[in-house]
Each structure stands twice: as structure tokens, then as C-alpha cells.
Image 1: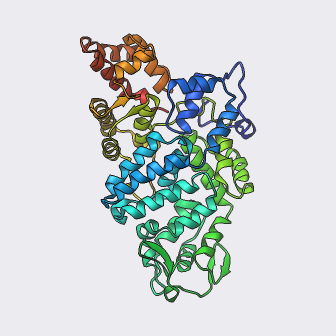
Image 2 (image 1 turned 120 degrees about the vertical axis):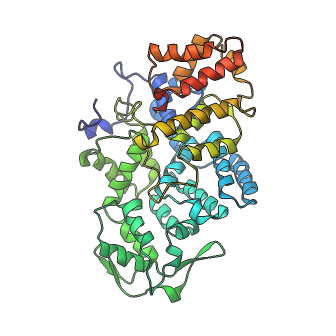
Image 3 (image 1 turned 90 degrees about the horizontal axis):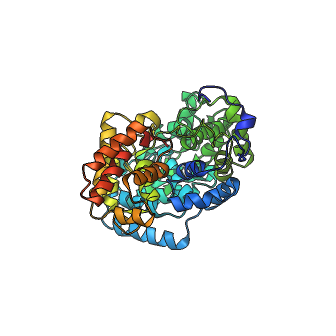
Length: 455
């Protein structure tokens, strides 16, 4: 099916049910785990095939809170990093969560909201504020979108990043008001310049003291405003609520989530989007039911979605490591991700990352390959606590061809052609006298192929 062909919404959003023409198999299970997280090892894929796909999706969505023990460990690591006050070091604490969280969909969606409500540490330059925002996104990632927007509007890092902390009655700053409508809730064309000006007045007097939000009533414009055809002596909370009541909100968010979870280049017609938009509004903008509907749908498990996304740097690197039960130096990963375009806490601008084809060019492809090489060559890198050779041997993967087959089914969304396999086999054979180096060379070569960039 061509991604530009109009898609029947009744078929698209009906629950996927295995059939002879579209059986539930290892490929679809791996697809689900890649998109609803960063991937699972082959044992988990085999277990998933024995389960009902609808039940599996429901289970993934239900894990919308981190288990207490894991959160305590991850928070303690972040707290130790915060003591140094360097936001760049904080990125490694998030890498730890990405690598080890038992709630992968929650963390994947937290990453989505970080790109949606993009806030950069270069401007904020306060590690504790950035981490507090990260926790805020995680707490609401699969929860109440309206609550998330209200909270992000008062978030100190956001107030600094979009200059809302200096929004004063005499000189209203329009940055946050504009992005609230354009980038966070409605999209271009759904508001006027007058709406921006009036909404900015609602937020006057909002500021930060001791890293916490507060209202300065002396700097607030208490006069009447008209925002999106609603009038009143609105404050900031009222302004946010007026925006959230607009019917464009549900369509805007649905479109972004579909591109994130399903395909970079879907033909998102109004007819295709509207049923999910209706569901989102009927569920009072609760995120989990919407994500569950997407992940359990015919469309998600169809050729329209399979291998139709380009992996972000985090999806490529974290995905490889999770699929192979790998561990390494999280600082190495964090620095490497920033070097190839996805620095955690360092989005390029308020629009976040463009994603899709924008992830890939000749420079970033080389950078991706080099980062994989750095990880594989690091003495800190282990696979289920072992070197790569012993890890593969424990899985009864002993020959080069067996390793190629194992890596192909574990890491790739599409089958490799014979020429690609011959290419990586030849590269690995040059290290025939050193089994460990041969296997790492093989994994590096496979991870550098164009096909490995597809999810």
C-alpha cells in the first residue's frame, strides 16, 4: 500500500486480528516492541508471539508509571549528577533510564513530549530545572494532556526558555503564547496575531523565584482579553483552558503521535485523523487510550507502518543495546547522541527535532557508524554481562552466517539482500583469527547499513 494512497479509516482503526494473510509472527512482535519502546531481546520476541497482540498492547500501555524500586535507583543516579550542576552530564542519567526502564512505552513517550515541548539546556543552563521538567513529562507522558499543558506552562525551565518569566504588564512577551498555540496545541493557521497578543497578556506576571513558579499580581494585566473569540479577565490558567477547548487540539496531537508511532510520511487526511481525534476528545484528552488505539490497530501492523520510519539516533543506539542486552558507559552514549543530532536536553530549537528524513545525511550516517564503533570498542561494553562471542554462544549462535541471521532478525525491520550479507561477511572475515573482533566487526558493519536505519 502506498503511503500517499487515501486510507480507509474504518479499516485503519479497527483492532488488528491475526489472519492467514497477516499472521501474528516474530516480525510483527519485534515491530511492536521497536515502536512502543526501543526493542526487546529475542527471548521476549518469542514469548510475545505466544500471546494475543491486543493483550500485549494493553499490557504495554498499562505500564504508565515507573516501578518504585527502579525510579528510586534512576532518581538517585540523576541526583548524584545534579550535584555537579552540569546539564550536559545530566544527559547520561536519562540514557540510563532509556537503557534499563521496565516501562519502555512510558519512556518512549516521554522522549516524544521532550521533542514536542522542546526546551534546551543551553539557554536554561540549570540542570535541576531541566531534570524537574523531564520528570514532569514522564509523570504525564501517558496521562492527561490538558494537565500536562497546564503544568508545562508553569514549568520553570519552560518559563526561562520561552521568556515567559519576563512577561510583564507594561511589556507583554509573546513567545510562550505563540508557541503554546503554534507548536504545542493547535498548529499554524488556527489562531491570529491578535490572539497571540491577547494570550500573552494572560501570562503577564508569571515568574520564577528560587527555581519555583509564582505569580506576581503587580505585574499581571487584569483587564479583559479576547482569545480565540472568548472574552474575559483571563489569567494564564484561563488562557491555557481556552486554547485546550479548541477542536483543533485533538487533530494536531493525533497527527504528531501518528507520525511518531506509525510512519514518517503518512497521508494524514482529515477523514483518517478524525476518528482518533474524536476518541481523544471523548476521553477528555487522556493520552493512554489514544496510544492504545494506535498501537493495536490494523494500520499499525500493516505495510503502511512496517519499516516506514527512520530511526532517531536514540532509537538506533538504545535499540541495538536493548535488543542485545548490552550495557556500556552512559556518558559515552549521551555525548555520542548529541554529536549525531539528538542531544538529550539539547533540542535544536523550540520546534524540537524535525525527525524523519531530516535525521539522515552523509555526515550523520558516518557519525552513527562511528558512534556504534565507539560503543563496540569500549571496554565498558558488555552483552548480558559477557563479551559478544560468549553472549552469542549462549544463544547457540556460533558461525558467521548464524550471527548474520541472528542480527538480521533481531535488529532489522526488513530482510537483507544477498549483496548486503556478502559485504558484511567479507568485512568480518578479515578478522577470522580473532572471534571476538570478528563478531564486533560484523555487528558494526550491519548496524552501519542503510537498512539498519529503518524502524
